[in-house]
Length: 127
View 1 (cartoon, one colour):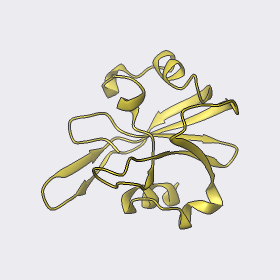
View 2: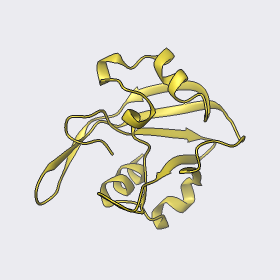
View 3: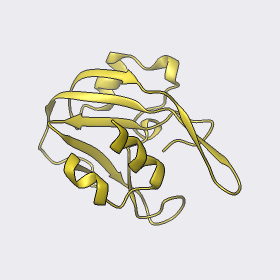
């Protein structure tokens, strides 16, 4: 997920699979799966996201079909508030070649039991 001053997660989907990122052991949601953070893929603000910038950022994962911004929301912690700006990304073609090892495709039917942070699971199950 994205911090309050950073651009948020992308929701990469292809043939009923979600692309998830294995978070590092340190920090928030350590060790859990989560949606990939756009600012980890490329440096951009929401207003700078275009089909071209997304295709370039996602080139290791697949060919972009469509994208849309979903309604943003926040998640409160005891010491800060996380502002989340989700982007739904549909791929026309998923590349099955070796990519970054901390990303994986998870079948939608497995999302309910996947080790996801509560706001991420809630978002995915609502779509």
